[in-house]
Length: 58
Image (tube, rainbow, N blue to C red; front, side):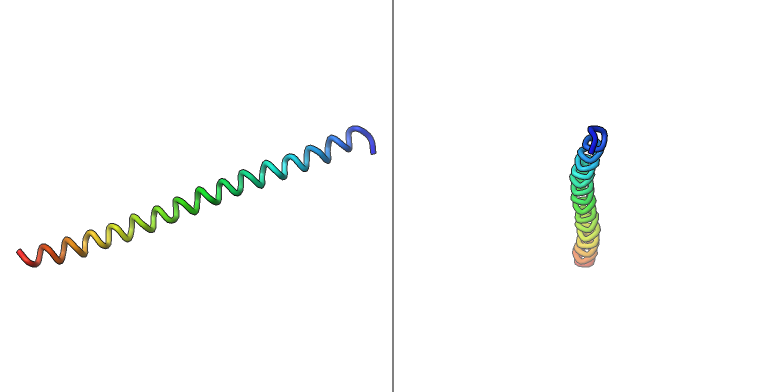
């Protein structure tokens, strides 16, 4: 193995590690956004149901 091949292998390993971390962060962020959207949808449904229940009493 010459010096260029060693640096190429090291570069590939470092690139894989960086991409692994970036993909992990990206999926964590997407999962958080997905949960946030679900919470907002359920909160809106509960709000309108409660508003409908309390407006009928008046």
